[in-house]
Image (cartoon, rainbow, N blue to C red; front, top):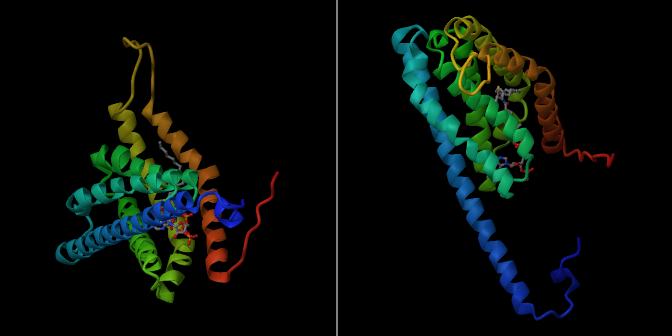
Length: 246
Ligand SMILES: CCCCCCCCCCCCC/C=C/C(=O)SCCNC(=O)CCNC(=O)[C@H](O)C(C)(C)COP(=O)(O)OP(=O)(O)OC[C@H]1O[C@@H](n2cnc3c(N)ncnc32)[C@H](O)[C@@H]1OP(=O)(O)O
């Protein structure tokens, strides 16, 4: 698309100059915000990593670990909602849908599974996804930070686009096993379920909803994984992927 700047056809340059200046300021502001955001997120997940390592070294067990770190986890994972906002307002050029699925599945795990169903907080699968998320996020946010500062060490770039090959399936396994472990408690307690008769005349069974969520990983996860494989090819091997129109 040719802009009027490129056309250079008169048009009283001052208006165009003002528009260019406004875009530059917005660009600088957005970059500054993203640098701050990514530094805060890297720091948050580092705090979480240190807290988990300290807990395990002091107690020699992972039992009780979730309870100790839950506040930090909830805060920083919930804060990641801003990533969807970043895409939606266009300061980050990536898919709102892909980011939305990723972020909502994490928030769902944190608030509607691990926070709400206390009996599963000491499951090994919880520790599995916690460790995997933590490694992923420290790598990912430090990658964005250094990239924005134009000083990206190659090993961070390499880690960002290689670790996920193992970590993504491992994280998904941790999440699915955790939801699976929650099912008996959900059935027993009827948590988040709405039974008939009630004044709204609506019924909702959280148990079956969780089964649907688990099943939805089958079509959704490969799409996220292939998205990352495409990103990897583009960034590490400089391949340009041309999308078909139809
Ligand atoms: C109601 C219930 C709903 C439940 C739904 C259930 C279904 C769920 C199914 C799937 C479940 C998945 C579960 C996930 C588990 C895990 O996370 S396990 C741990 C392993 N995880 C990973 O490795 C995560 C990998 N995923 C991601 O990194 C992201 O989530 C992503 C959205 C897939 C990343 O994609 P994208 O942003 O497109 O890739 P990048 O290459 O990183 O970035 C593209 C460009 O965007 C820029 N950018 C992005 N974010 C930022 C930022 N914060 N700051 C600055 N810049 C950013 C980036 O620099 C790139 O820009 P260019 O360089 O210009 O291309």
